[in-house]
Length: 137
Picture (cartoon, rainbow, N blue to C red):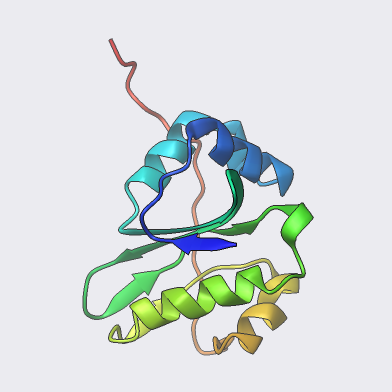
């Protein structure tokens, strides 16, 4: 497996990965690709030319980093790829005070094993609207 911060997957590869893990974001391919391309950091994992996983980060550079995406193709799940990706991202942002992510409740145990903690004194607040992009002419 090749782990790299240097490789942007093709739009089709991104959409296929999101669809493979049944993320709703796959329904918005243009917005999804735009969001990933504009993340501050993109870590991808490759099995030759096959995109096996990706993780993104957005940061203010000193106090906060947010990890919006961590996806592993189901064919590669359970092989330690997710843990390695989290380890690499946490290492890259070790100097940042607060590391933030939002996950499904059934995934919290995985992130706890990676050194994250579920805080009871804070709550994630969300508002989800469909993405709207101007028509490209």
